[in-house]
Image (cartoon, rainbow, N blue to C red; front, side):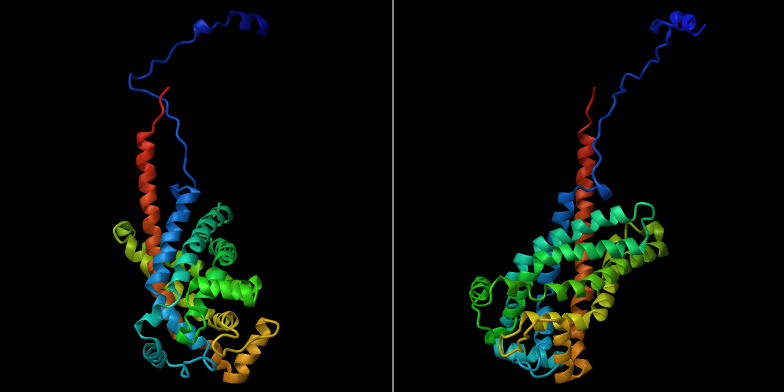
Length: 333
């Protein structure tokens, strides 16, 4: 019976369905997460990182000088005294000493930082895009990758920030001298400490940023698009300030390791975090672990606001470009 019915069935028995004259099937290629491709995250992150660090560099210089207190030129932990000492010994240019190293390191490092973060965030939070643990974990992965890129230039930057007492004439002189006298390991002397500091810093930062952003948008969802810049800046500032306050002791250890042996700063035999912590506490008490916390927060609050605003603006730009390309690149058959 089935065979007979099949024999009776012919293609010509199908009723054709007419298509409208302007019908054309479309072939589209969907961009990656958030409507962006991997390289677009990298460019947006690179620009954001450079703008952030270059704009806030003088504050970073003050923080570095304060954290090597006790053996380097500045003898007071006060923010005002630190600034006055830098201006007196090096002039206004002293606030920008080492900015070349920052420029060379911040762009590539932040390109890695944000692209890894976005990829991990998408991977870890597929079922729940508002999962703070996914944001925190993605931030940890991002900082491990970006610190591998940034740590060498950060070490050069901090040694140059010590001012006229520093024995180096510039970025390339510092790189050449360190390679000759201390070897390539000196560039990564603080990498372990940097990761141990930046892992909780980034976890707190990203989780706070995503939560604050959602909270601020929830206050006025109807005007979220109009106030997008304010939302990103405010959420970024809150996240940066909180993360900076929590991780200041490890930042002091990192600075001590990167500047050891320079300008009279202490040199550590094994470079262990425990050894550095004991030395700081012995010489200056537990308050020594929080040297530079004010300029660190003054740096990270506006720096994070600048960084997130620039990054999100870059993402919006690429999203608009991709949407225009999608509308203009319809493939017809």
